[in-house]
Image (cartoon, rainbow, N blue to C red; front, side, top):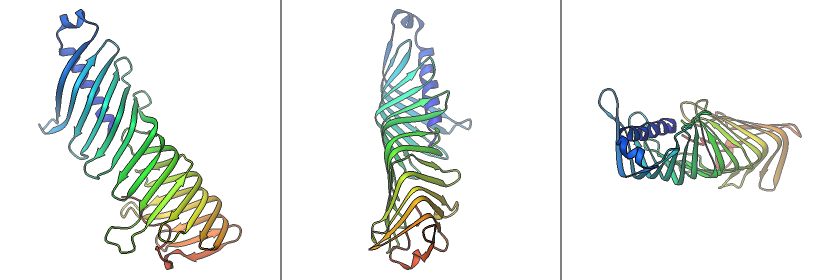
Length: 286
């Protein structure tokens, strides 16, 4: 879902409405109100590219206020964006969406919800200070505040991060749930298949109760399988399994061999795949 495309299209669409309005009406009133609208966009080949629907648009000299925004995007990445209210600043092109903001990827089923979403045109960033929830078929990520590029390929959840992850396929009888929490921030880069959790990171495997604690946890994913290729925990690393607790300065997990190697105080090597749960780290996302 490319939010940047959506925001640009909304701006262009409503400027089009203003430019086609009757000039005498514009000069006679400080603002205009349009009840109900439907705008459609098409590719050069005539295929429908997008549509934007709304219940009402209030147009003033400084901004355009939209009610009940509902936008659909077609083509390579089909998506839907809805919000109760939206405001476009006509001076700088910045956009604010608020109340029940939902971005849904139709193809992948990923859904992001928040209370507000701001787009800064000059910085080319979307952001919110409100709680964020991201849901797909493998799990849920929640947190407080987010900054992202408009295409969501790079994003940061600012604090109070919690990821509840279904690590294996639904057909796997040993399906596992892992919960990763951190104070934040948590950054993710879909282009390089990389994610990092910062500050007081705790990963817990539901079926075994096994825990990993660290100051920082970095995860690299396999581009083809989306499974974890490597995980690196650094700073005050602690592994808890039943009554046993192991401490180290660093821990490396190899996704192919499912081996955890802990170095520091002391060095411990054990086969995470031999225990129930198939190790702490399995595929965390699509």
